[in-house]
Length: 464
Image 1 (cartoon, rainbow, N blue to C red):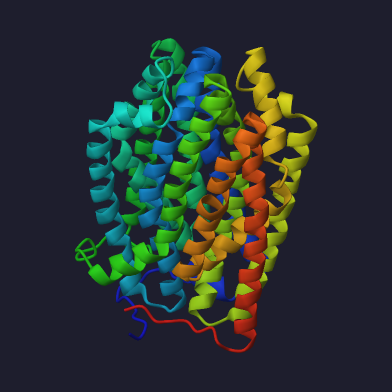
Image 2 (cartoon, rainbow, N blue to C red; image 1 turned 120 degrees about the horizontal axis):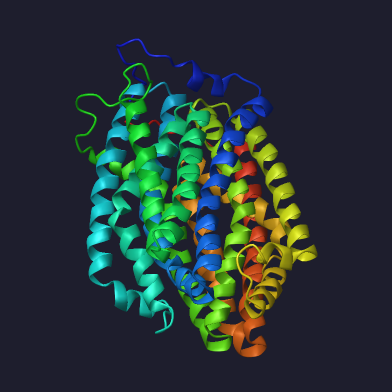
């Protein structure tokens, strides 16, 4: 179908600049707010962990770590809709297909609400067995249960908040998307001590603070998309179910969805292996190490989110030289970030860990785990960017393979083989081993894409 325009007068300048402005300036404009947003997003998880660890205790930290697989699974369903819709909208804007882009926005609302509510109903009804399956003991189950009950009740809100924020960024408003995330973090940081300490609600207080903060930001996002002057806005007919749009959006979002699902089961296996070889404190140590590594990975994801609308728009417009330029620039900065993370983790692990706990034994376990887990960190930036690059272009099959290869093809076998040989160290070392192999695969796949591009075999498809 040929690109369509919309009749009312709206400002399309922000979106159209993606095809004309210098790549370096564009990436700075889009990535910097996204980096702040993603870093802030990881910070409110870290804030929860710090307040819980310092205010409730080491068993509460371990209980929180038990919830990671469920949180990953919830995020998987959220990204299935949000990430796919964001990439699809970027391509549609590059094709000047504003009518269908608005329909994608409406489907984000419909799909996220349905999936969010269904996930809550199913998970709440089976919560205790699920947590026990994920490694909860009689010491950690009460904390994990209290935290997840509140989070699950706000699950649909979380899905809508993240989905609309991704769409907002893709429609040419990176600073507004950043502001929504910062608002969430600031509110969460302010509410955490009130609910955890002031009202003496412990882990339940941390969960309530998170849901309330996301609710306020969601209301603001809804008000933005209610503005008829925006390129994308709520209007009559956009909320009706469109199977073609849903299929296209979900197929693109399938890569991050499957990655998060795989991550859910990988964390389950990690927790079980750590429990077997190190006990509850080893699980708590993984929770701390995971939060620290996420700080740097969220910066990389921020760079990816900055790259995504630029790559998607120019791919939709057939400007492939600009697509490759933004890829090269993003890889450079992402690699710089993970190298910095590697150096900090190796040189001062105990300083980083101390923010989460004052327990000497837990600090020792987490410090050693951090050093082992980030051995391959310098190549992680490259691997993550290439995987997200294919997703940005709507190349679902390539993105799915790259997303799953690290988790299923490499990490799970290493987690089965290494712990019996090296104990707890084997669990930690499995992760950098998988990262290294995945980076090599990413290099081969990118080289293949570039060969096809030079031969003129890469074409952009129109989406009806």
